Image (cartoon, rainbow, N blue to C red; front, side, top):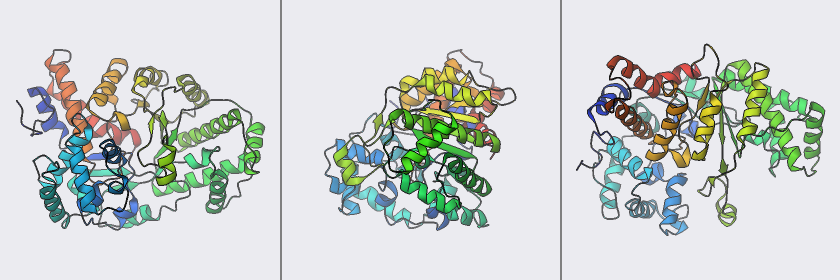
Length: 464
C-alpha cells in the first residue's frame, strides 16, 4: 500500500515518476485564467487566519459543506472563522474521491508543512499550525514560493485597471499580472441590469452608446485600453455560443429597443449576442489576442439562495444541450473573413469532449501550433477522472503535445497546487502510455513534451 499523498502521489510507475520529478515539477507556473483580485497583489495582502485565505469566496468548498448539512451561518454567515474552519474540517474527511480532498492536503503540505490528514479531530492542530505560518506569508510571497511566472486575472471592460498598472510599475515585484477582457455584461442584453451597465460603459469610454455602431466604438475604446495595459486574452461566459444571423440594421434596432426599456424576443437576444461575439472576435484577431469561450453552465439554479446570497455562491450546474452546430457556425463566420483569433473552447459538460475535439481540428492554421484549443477540464471536471478523460479525448482526436495545459480558475492564492495536481495526472497518463509500449521511451522527446504542456506551450501560444 502506498503512503498517503507522498512524493510519488498519483505516480504509479518509474517512467511517470521521472516525467514529473525531472521535467514537470520545476517548471514555472503560467496561470492564464484565474479570479484573483489584483488589488490584493498590489497591496500584498496578508491573511489573519486559514479561513480567510481558504474559505472566503470558495464556492467549491461551500457546496460540499451544504452537502454535509452545515448551516449557512458556518458557510457564508456570521459564525467565527474558527467555527467555519471546524465545519470545513468535519466535511473534508467525508470528501473521498473529491479533488477538494487532494487540493486541500497539497496546500497543507506545500504551504504549511502539514503532512497529516485534516478532519474534525485534527482541526485545532491544523488551525494553529496554519495561522502561525500565515504570520510570515502574504499574497506576493505565496506567488513567489509557488514559482508563479505570470497570471491573468478576470476583468470587466469598465474597470480602470489601476491595480494592474500599479503592479506593472512596481519594480520590486517581477511576477507578471495581466488583465483579461471579460465583456459578458456588455453582451448579456437579457439581463435586468443591462441598460444600467451600458450607461457605465458610455461613461468610462467617453462614447454615448445609443446604437450598435456606438456600442462597437465603446467596446473598441476599452479593448484598446486593455491592450495598452498588457491584456492578451479575452474570456466569454455564455450558456452556449449562439449563431443567429442578422444584418446591421436589425441589430441596431434590437439594441435601441432594449435601451428604450422594451422586451425582446429570444431570437432578438440571440441575434444581438451573435453580432457582439462576431465583432469582438474580429477585434481580438486584429490585436493578436486569444479568445476563451466558456459555456455549458446553468447559473443560480436555487432561486431562494440566489435571492439571499447572489451570484457565484455555489448553485450552478452543468447545461446538457450545448449547440455545437452554432459554435461551428460562429467559428466559420470569423474564419471566412480571416478574422478568427486563437480560440480556447471549454465546456462544463464532459459529454462535449469529443465534439470539441473534432471541431478544433476543422479550424487549425498553418504556422500556428494548436491555434484552436480544447481548454483544460473545467470547474466540475477538474478532478482526476475529468482531467484524464479530457486529455485522453484530446489525445485520441488531436495533438495532446500542443495542449496549453492547466489553470486555476480560482480566487485563492493557495490554489497553485492545482497545477501540481494536473502535472502529476498528466505525467501519470503519458507515462502509462509509454510503460505500455504505446509511445517510445525517448527521454529527449518526452522531456520536451512534458515541459511544453506544463509551461512552454502556454507561453508561446499567448505570446506572453
